[in-house]
Length: 442
Image (cartoon, rainbow, N blue to C red; front, side, top):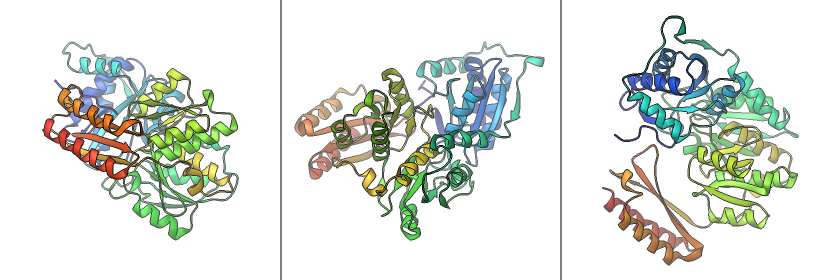
């Protein structure tokens, strides 16, 4: 049977693929593998299906003898932090991140606040398929209780990263995407001393990510210009990523936020090993610009857990993705949109230059991304005729271009990315490769 876990946990349409029965089974198996007799911190975003799946997941965990600590609606990185702070055996988040309202997901963190490895996920799946799991009885059955101060503890932690407040006044517009940042975002930036204008800042599980947040920056850009703000920040549904717009309303993607942070830490002498970890989706222009400043750029596979693994392997303290996941290793073990936003705002507040200048430190190579709907994404890696066409396309582009194919871990898509010095050439090659993907995998 196909693997249940994708690149960021288990996802699907709530009550269709991701049912309460599946959540119960996941909880029981994860509790058995990761936390038997221990504690698990559980949090969620605002999705309407969240309470349904939370109840089932918690029941499964308790049936495995786990003491569940309920954090409520909090950002995903808050669960990672609380897992460590509570000395819990594991953490679990019910969220589908930037996905549409009808989707939901379940992902797990280790006792170190790191996303679970493929090895642990495989063990969970094996337990789910086993009829012989011995479950506790009587007093050994688990229980659940609420962490009353969960959000406050997380906010205290991330605000310490900017020494409690910004060095000068700053006006910021926050797009909270009707998601997990709806309360945490305005509270964090307000406590740091910013003048905050918050939009989409109610916990509405029927509107999470709908035409807003990091998947749609248009309303944020308009509001930043209207308010005369220094910057705008857009979170996704679980607030583990952030994108920005500058004072002119122009988009600032994850490459620029990551690079801007790297340059800042490098200048302070706090970028260990003069190194940053990005992913294969990051722009070649980003890589070359940082290398010109004496900063080595390492590429990891897409997914912030792979970025975190590469950071640990190479001794890096900073990593991230073009999509807006940024891991600031001194303060977090996983992507954290609000923490990253605080760091960016602090840099802007302390500078005599606007975000438009601070972030635009490189000229990006023209990059074309096409999402191709396919029926057989699982065949991508082994489809040799398709890869032969990709190699031919890359050879034709030369050293100033590249072709990347990646199967989505959460959707029935293959993402085709082409970079080239010539934008017309990049578009042409991307369309040709996308056509081949469509033909071969449908």
